Length: 630
Image (tube, rainbow, N blue to C red):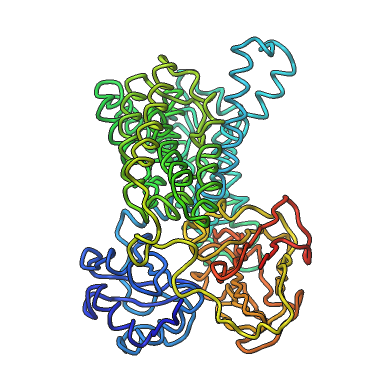
């Protein structure tokens, strides 16, 4: 693919984004231009996506992100020259001066995401565990009176039962409060003697009436309590001298917050949460058709914009209040319909690279309920498959809602293997028919009308790798790069499971994610450092034979502005496989609420014969993780 002229591209991009007057902040990370716009509706997103050099556009968290690839600093420099009043001129990923604060919805979504994202997979796994256990008991495969059942039930239910303790940790990270003090406050809410007081009798604290409610599996009370705790701790840290601060601050925080939460915060937030859950319940009970169409049809749109995080606490509260969630009912059809549309693309297309991406992406949707790869990589760029998936989700969701579709375990990712979680649905067979109808609509319409050759696709919709990311030829006489090694030991995961839609979709190339076990990260291959973010969170390496590699440490860690990162290389340095790139304080990154998953992708995937990730759980630094076949 021809080299992109970023000097010519910059004014064109600026015009399509709404002009200079529409930009209030400008920054970039390793792969994306990050704009904060006064009015995002003025940006011609469709036209921007068709520009040569643009991979895709992501609108999230109050930012308008134009994904470019590892050449983003070249475009940033050209755009910044046209906007001299914005940005610092450093590639620090900062928001720049004058950036407006996020609107309340963006702030709420970011809050819920930060608190729930770290626990969601465990919540999903234990929820599925409990669903299968219930199925086995229903089929009389296990005796509910047995000790075996008791042990398994405790294992599957404990995480949800003691959810306030779990959320205390993630909320404390977000609000910058002491995590263990937060756990002490949460522990008071679910302490056995406090739980036993929820007997309908009259109870007091220092003569003040206590309104005792059940806080097991609750969400809002502990989140609000930890938020208040963070302010109590700041006051204590200012008041107490250093000799007493370490033990006095936790003592006073627990002394104040435990009674305060039981007296006021707990009852108030529980009443509000129960009211919201009851309102949702009434909608699905009295107007199930409407609820099913809205949730089933627009669920994937909600997910794309990250708004589903706003529904997570509502669904969890539904289960806490009523014993089950009806919002989950239509989601099964919505998820599987998008996966079915992607499967139809894979079967119908003649493009080998599209099939290579669509196959595993649709499989992840069917089996794990993870649809971001299929949406961003396949359905959305072609539009019709995405629309047919929405239609299938709306029809199937409406049927599922009428059937009373529900789950009683929070965190379930609707998928084929999660079907046992829906067995408590009053009309389960009708719900299942709804899912099948939704899948059939999406698959048949996409197969017949939604696929056309990539040669006929509009510019910017072509697959097989990001525009402008093909490797420069380099010296083909150089020793060929046949594999990449793990830059750090840890747990390797498929790229589609990485919690960033741009990486997980494969838009930037094929690769692997690694949850690091240590903070020393090394080069996965020999070559020259062509990108070294001053924030230390991302590096680009080009091998002598032209393979372009991106190492991205963590998700959205650009926002840390270098805190916790100590780079060991600079642009132009030569490195060998295993040479150190950066030292990372993983505890600090985790404490700030960021996912430390390190992504290794070959951004020049499109120019290579095959890039085959080798993902098999635990890996050691230096082991082969990606094989390259020319």
